[in-house]
Image (cartoon, rainbow, N blue to C red):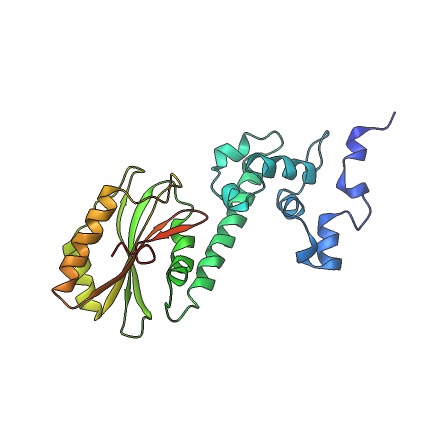
Length: 232
C-alpha cells in the first residue's frame, strides 16, 4: 500500500505540477490562486498537499481573495494545517496586495467620475470591519490635493465634525471635496444619517464657495454615488 505522506508530498510531483517550479519556468500569471497560496504556506500535512489545503481555505470564502484578506490570524489558524507562521504569511501577502492596489490608484491624476474616486478609496475602505469617514480635497482641476480620515467608528456609524472639514479645505485651498464612507455590512443603501451629514456639509461648503462633488458609500465590491443618483 502506498504511503500517503509520499503521494501528497509536492517534492514528488512533476515540475509542471510544483507551484514554485511552475512559477519560475512558466511565469506567475499561469498559477491558480490556490497554487500561489500554496507557495506562501510551503507545505501541507500528511493527508493533504499545500495546494489542496489552499483550495479548501479559498473555498471557505467562495474563492474570493478580498474575502480571504479579511480573515484574521485566528480565523486562518482554524484550518487544520495552518499554524501561526503560515497564517501570518498569508495575511502579510494579501496586505501587500491591498497596498499595491492603493498605490496604483494614486496614479489617477484627475477625478473625472465617481469610478475614479472609488478606485482611490476602495483599497482604503473596502475591506474594513468598522466604519470610517474620509474626504478627498480637490483643486480646480479636480486633482486630489489631500486625503483625510475624519472619523473612525463602529459598524453602526461615525461622527463627523463639519467644522474640521471646512478648516482643512480652506487650509489646503481646495475648491471641491468628495465625501466617502464605508458600509461594512455590504449594503449600498444610504441611511437617513448619511443623507443628513451630506446635506449638512454641502450647506456649510456653499457658504465658502467649496463644491461637494459627490458622497460615495464604499463596500468591498461596489459603491453608491450620491451624484450619480441625483442625491446632491
